[in-house]
Length: 82
Image (cartoon, rainbow, N blue to C red):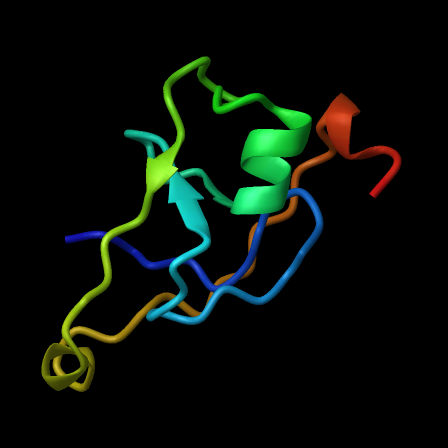
């Protein structure tokens, strides 16, 4: 099950579980669409994998399967100007 991380690990923008601008790679590195597309050109700066839109968990499943509360921030060179 996806962790549904709560933020972009580059700019720290909040990404709600229903956010349509949340992007992930196969390792669940999570970015907002602005960072994923603008800074990283659709390629994860951690693993080199493709960044794609994160699926949205149905609202009626969130109570039993809540999103992660752990915020992840990493010092990517592309984020220095963020």
